[in-house]
Image (cartoon, helix red, strand yellow):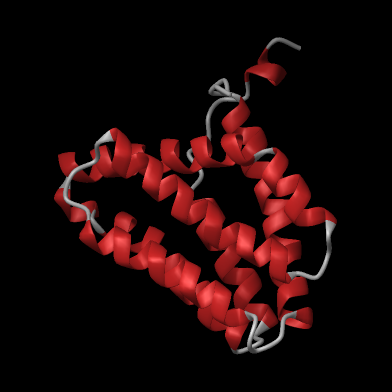
Length: 164
């Protein structure tokens, strides 16, 4: 699947709805033991992010896979059987959206190293969200989810509305 650039906005809107609801349900429904799966997914993502020096195709694929796995795990822990199925159905679009946003920030930060904090926030967003979920802090988790998804969104012009 190769998504068109304008579809990135659609994927972002989809993720804002699904991810926010799955975080809410995970806080309500996930057992403390099952949250260990989420911690493992978060640790795998963070450890990889801390180890990268270059951004080749394999690195981009791994970032997409690990980021996706973290968010899929939240869907699975929500207790709603449909959310993970829907998330899996559009996984390639989600992974492409993740990679597109990360790659743009990577190269932007290489041009202006003072913006390295964008890359750090990308990684830290997962860690902060994990902590809020484990603390069962609904308000904080919702705020972090919103900030994390908005940070990862490169808003593209909406060409659908321009032609109307």
